[in-house]
Structure formats: C-alpha cells, structure tokens
Image 1 (cartoon, rainbow, N blue to C red):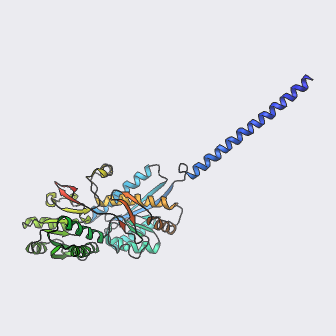
Image 2 (cartoon, helix red, strand yellow):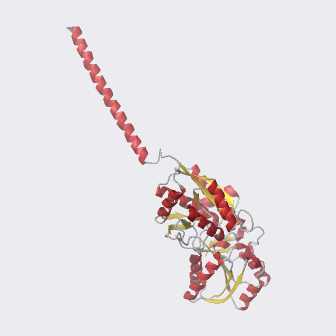
Image 3 (cartoon, one colour):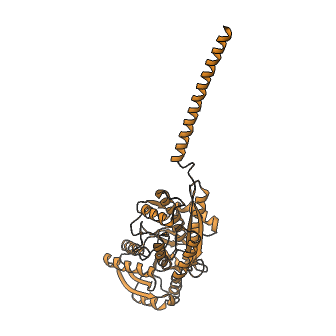
Amino acid sequence: MKKKLMCMFMAICMSMLNKIAILIFDCGSKGDDANTDANTDGTDNAEVQTFKLGTSGPLTGDNAIYGMAVKQGVELAVNEINASDSKIKFEFLSQDDEGDGEKAVNAYNNMMDNGMQVLVGPTTTGASIAVADACYTDRTFMLTPSASSTDVTAGKDNVFQVCFTDPNQGVGAADYMAENFADAKIAVIYRNDDAYSQGIRDAFVKEAGDKGLSIVYQGTFTLDTSSDFSVQLAAAQTAGADLVFLPIYYQPASVIFAQAKAMGYAPTFFGVDGMDGILDMPGFDTTLAEGLVLMTPFCATVESSKSFVDAYVAAYGTTPNQFAADAYDGVYIVKAALEQAGCTADMSNEEICDALVSAMTSLKFTGLTGTDMTWNAEGQVSKAPTAYVVKDGQYVEG
C-alpha cells in the first residue's frame, strides 16, 4: 500500500513539474516574441543601410577653394554619420570636375560607374546645369550644395538646392540696401557671361527699382576680361557711386578691391555668397576687404557654428566657408530624406530618387545654413539670407 501511495505521489509531482516547465517555457517564448516585435519596430536591431554618396567640384584651378570646401564639408558629415549609431551610413565618392560642364558630366559618369546612388553636388552653377540633365535622364537624385541658378533645377523634378537661389540673393540684397543704404548711389559690376552673376544682377536691378533705390552705373566683364577693372571703377567713381554691388566670385572681387584702393576710390562694397572665401584666398590682403558687406547664410564666428567650425579646423586646418557649410548640411539633408522615405540600399537609383523627391517637398530641416528650411516642387529652398560685415579680417553680423 505504501509503495502504491509513493508511486501515485511521484506521478503527481512529475505532472506538476511538467506543467510548471511548460508555463515557464511559454512565458519565455512570449517574452522572446515581444522582444523580437519591439526590436523590429524600433531601430536597435534595424539593419544598417549603406548608400554610395558622391560629390564633385573644382579641386584644381581658379575655383579650387570652392570645390575643396564642398568636398571637405561632405566628407566631414559622412565621417560623423558613419561614426554615429545611425542606421544610415555612406560610402563617399569624389571627383574633380574643374568647374567645367563637360568635365563635370564625365566626373558624374565615373561615379555612376562606381555605383553612386545619390549626388550631393556639383559645386558650381555651370557644372550643375550640365550634370542636372544627366541626373534627370538617369533618375539619380541630385542635391547641389552651392549652385544657385534657377536653371539648375528648371524642369527637373529630382534636382534640389541647398543654397538660396540667384533671384533670392538679388532680391535680398536690394531689400537689405533699402533698409540700410536707402540713400546710396549704387554701381553694379557683374559678369555677363556667367549665369550666376547675371541671374543675381537681374533680380537685384528689378527689386532695386521696386524699392526706389538709385543705380547710377552698371558695368560688365567676362572671364577673359576679369584681370582689369580700371574702366568700370573709374566710371562708377565718376557717376558718384558710394556703394558698389558685386554679384561675382571672390577672384575678380579681389582684383577690384586692389585696383580701387590704388586709384583712391573707397566705396562700400557689397557682395554675395560667391565672394565667401575671399578672406582665405592665398596672398590676399584682408585689409582690402575691410567694411565689405556680404550676403551669406553662414558665418564661422557665430556661436551656433562653433562645433562644426572646431571639427572642420581639426580635420583640415582651415576655417570653413559657406560652401563647406552648405555641403555639410547637404549630407544631413539627404540622410533625413532617406530616413523619412524609408529607403534601403538595395533599392534601384530610380526607386531611391522617386522616394527622395517625395520626401523633400515635405521635409523641414534646420542646419548650419538655415532654420526650418523647406523645398518647393521646383527644388528651390526657402530660407532667409543674412548679411555680415568684414571687420578686422573677420565676419561679424551686419
């Protein structure tokens, strides 16, 4: 009897142990399932997506300061993102296009041959106009950090800009003058064989007329005549211009400043974003730019730029200009758009392109070069330009 009771007791114990084990196993399984679901919905275990991102610009030649700034701005952002816990990563491709349209298309094709999926470039307007056509045909997404002509994006839904457009700059310059130099007699010296310079001048002249500003002289030059401005400066001085608007790049501006000083002509010079970088131009006497008013979305000396400037100086040994800041922002804009669109690296260029086009028109981005930046369907950015003044070789808020 005792033996029978003992057997029954052991059977009951075994049954209870089995039920407990099943309960434990079920709870563990449900816990694992819950963790799996949470990780799938979250980002902790999300698969890293590595996209091939390219840029191009003039790394040699007269405009190398712009191309190097863009390359380094892109590279710095890529390195930061790749070192972070972001699930978006980038493989960086770069080419020298010498600021030439034909060479820029060749550079683009070289990067496409190496699997480029997104382009943050080119740097200059002429190169960007040429490459934009190729990107539109290939359905490759393009975000130029620094080409500002509306011709870059016109008729191409997949081409976007980081910097404000030429008309925006021209209008902004006239509006600033209306508020701060309302009684000035203004001369305009611009390059009439350059879409960038011509575009800003056209918008400026129209807005200046609407604001009642007095333009007393307009002079032109071309690439081939950009080494001597004595005729234009003499004419501006004779016309009584006390403010000279220069919608041009920094190289011809440096010549103008030197020649104006040599002839004893000391108006207020007013430049646009293409002149950013003049203070870092090798051999340039920065005292010649004293008092220069510059429309640019970025200033390296303000507190909000400090962490970027410190990282850039540590990496490259020089102070970043607006082109570097635009390029840096450009990479983070692409990252934000890729995340918003839910792109994966195995998607085709066309699929990525179409997804980014859709994302860009609903994206709002705050970076070094603007707050709450948005883009319209024409790829043009909306943000306000800011004016700075050169004082003691540094930019200060105007």
